Length: 398
Length: 212
Image (cartoon, rainbow over all chains, first blue to last red; front, side, top):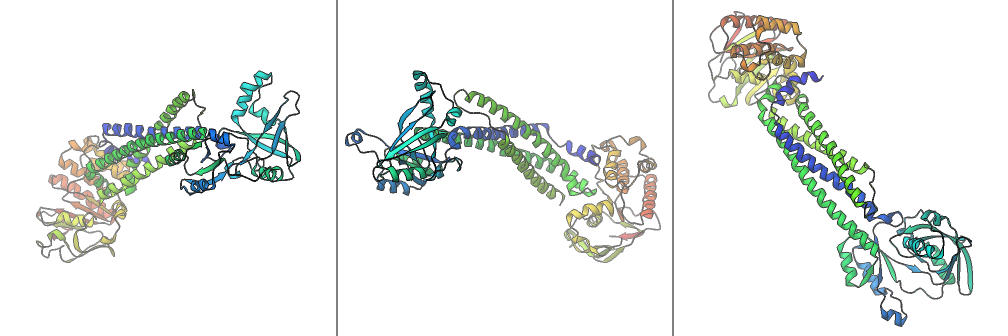
């Protein structure tokens, strides 16, 4: 069926300027490559900035007050007063406010394993379950349970593996192995004691404490706790964007402390977001200008050939038949450019990841998101071209 | 198909044109007849055939194809009409100089599949163009180009054939051959022929002569 377009194509071909097409192709290629590269990097780095997201919800920070010498002398803990808590809750950049609960009873953790004899005093803390992404079946406790799931800081395992174990001639443990060890927990207070079993169900980089389910700690504090609940010393805050600069200003103003990892992650995530947004914007501007160049070229071609297009139209060629060669050029040229830009962005991203891997735990993620973005961009470009070609051609024949 | 023109006049000529055989009158064109419009330059010959071909819309009055007012035909529907009902040899010819004689003809015939390759070659031979079939239209004389444009216009089914000064650059021998071919085609397709020319020269007594 395309044979009928042989002559039409011959007429149109004469009006296409090689340099015009080359200028468009190169600029569109650069623009699209930058957009896709920024997207590749954003997706890859999103993984590092929220490395802990497997356990904790993405957007939250943990704050505490600085422990000063006065606190040591007066034996008072650095707690948040209820006035301070109200002020925190009133800030619009915090979506949720919750306090850490601490254990107010005596806890001993020990193993009955001959190869790894261990006995230590311990403390527990809890945060509302909504901040923890752990599977609700493992992260649960009810009064009849004798098993307690625990989340410990990853640092604890590092301390053990690189400090404690070698000095005591004990075996080093991987996360997998230690997750399979069952510990015994003895809690006591108010002249009562009870035995539990416990297992580490996950590790955290974001919160430096030993976490247990909130229901367990509430029950244990009520039953074995030695005094009424005081004010919290650590507060967990939900945010819309943990990289919001107003948060850091507020925390500095009130002389609170913020979890270092959180800051690092937030700052990293903030800088990455800003950088990738700027890069993507530059790419977008270049790509839009390139598309404008292409549309302008089509406009020039059509204007220049207005008389010939009118003759073809007067010969009885349908409007869609006249549009077809222009749409084919648009589909093929943009298709080649999109594929080339995607491949170039993938290679560039590979190179960057290889470089970044030397100092950050990052790996290349599946290409799905950038690929979908590339296909969507392609469809948008084709659609915009189609509409523009149709408008210019329609004005040429009417 | 019958064509009926009711009181039409091109708007730009409204002040300068009085009643004639076509302007400001009732005029009907009937299938199987040849109409020969003879008039000097500037009296609206090209305007008239352009109105019938749907190119010009700046006129008052009404033109009917059968009973359809052509002013109401949607723009995109004209492609279909120009492929199947109304064909035209333009005064400016509208050939593509970069295409050869055969390619210019093929541009139309591939669209309609109306004539076989043999039929086209017969027409080319009858009009003395057999040595020019692979030459680009740009290097043909205007008279040769007029003959190419005529063959192209015949490569489709039509109920009306519009010929805008088709013989202006032809010698009388070639013009006569062209006229024979046109009459054969009109007879075959039982179509209306509307031919314009400057000259007061009748090619056949069978023609209806109209003056502007």
